[in-house]
Amino acid sequence: MNMIADGFLKELNKQKTDIDLTEIDLHETSDVNENNEWMIKFKNDYAYKTNSFSKHILLLNMHKQTAYLIKYKNKTIGYIRLIKRGKVFKAENVLSLDCVYIDKEYRKQGIYKHVIQELNKYFNVYLIHIEKNEALKHYKFFNSLGFYCGFNKNYNEYNGYYLYHKNIKLEGGV
Image (cartoon, rainbow, N blue to C red):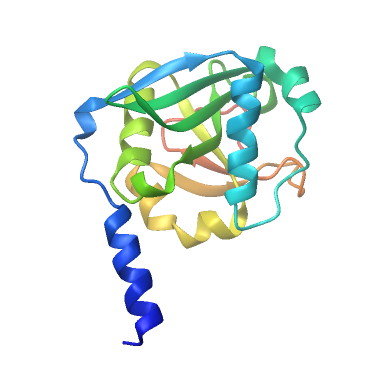
């Protein structure tokens, strides 16, 4: 292995923190500036082009969303945003996971999966709004959570690609 790759791997391993998932807490936030800050982090870190995002769009949609800060031992390490999608999919109480951001040093430790499983104990998080290539790349992971790939009937780049939970009941299908 060359020195550059070796140094990179050492730095990557140094960043990882073993965590106890039972100490993960979710704290609801409706603060526009806090939501905006996390959405910018998400957009800047995301490998693929995302839909245009602005604070104005966030303000227009605040009434349809519920957002949570992901905390570990009282330190904020991430963010998750859920959007009400029942009308779009003609199903009641359906929430779509539209944004998840976890700080880099806390990734690949099961936090994403843990948070989804915890949220599904209390809500019907039956949709994940995702870029198609990411959905296909991580298919086994999402499938382990009960999600499968599918298109919205009115699919286009704006309204996106959805992963559907096996428990979702839709009128007339998707």
